[in-house]
Image (cartoon, rainbow, N blue to C red):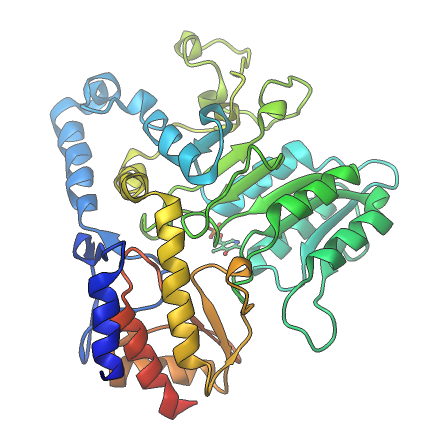
Length: 412
Ligand SMILES: *Cc1c(COP(=O)(O)O)cnc(C)c1O
């Protein structure tokens, strides 16, 4: 059997057949894309357009009365996202809310949970954190009158290694934990694709007396999560990567139950965070419910939430466990096909990575252009030298992986 025939056979016999037909797959100069950029912007579910049209129609038909008369009343629209989002991240329904965008949510969470005092001021992030996260924590330090250089601790892999070791993170928290106010790492690192040991690091951070929050931008919709059981303090994620909800889509936020009902937690408040049963009495007093909804500021962007709802329905239907199993099969296949010529910096251990392989290459940008032009393979570059390939299991196929491997081999 040729390699191509084998890839096609894997697609035909996989226990979770591809849902590619439910998505719009971009076209390239050489035909339909083999799309590996779902960790950057997920593809559009075909169901999104109908969902959006329904809200546009209700707005046209009802005007302001759509708040209560729309088929999905806008006043409570965000509540439609609650249960599917809770299932996605392993939370209780009242621990999650869809709102804002990711960096905004990280700031709102830090406004509540980063409370430096005495010697306990440090924020621990990973040295390869996404830039927005670095900016966010530095600005939080400055906001509290602290020196960011002395406040932000950046975790680096051991010399000669690409990825962080859990024991090193836990070791630092054991030694220096009394100075740490907040641990805020990416659940899956955007650059290397490393899946962190969330339960172990959460445990170590909390044992040290720190607050532990996770940026799940690359983890939500990619790997199964159990935020409630893992005792995570807070988390936030965007919805436009693995969650396929469109550019700048409304993000998600998790606050553990032990904080949602605690009135001593300070919040930046807005009218959508107050008790919905008294909100429209328009009184001056903020009276938040004992749920993550209390962190909402503004009335939600319905047109931006409709795609999230359509997308979460797909995740609900398939289930994260089945999706994760397929992601492991696809990623293992791609890894085996690339291994002979490629320097893969993503962990080789399937339990320490999600649906992503990062390759160390020369001229990542040039390589990405050539892959698309010559083979219709859409990857992405993180300059100068990292090429990322994400076989997103809803719509990326074994045959796509075959195409990527064939196209890359002569270029590496
Ligand atoms: C994608 C990503 C972001 C982007 O933040 P936005 O506020 O949604 O623009 C932030 N942090 C991480 C780790 C990301 O991967």
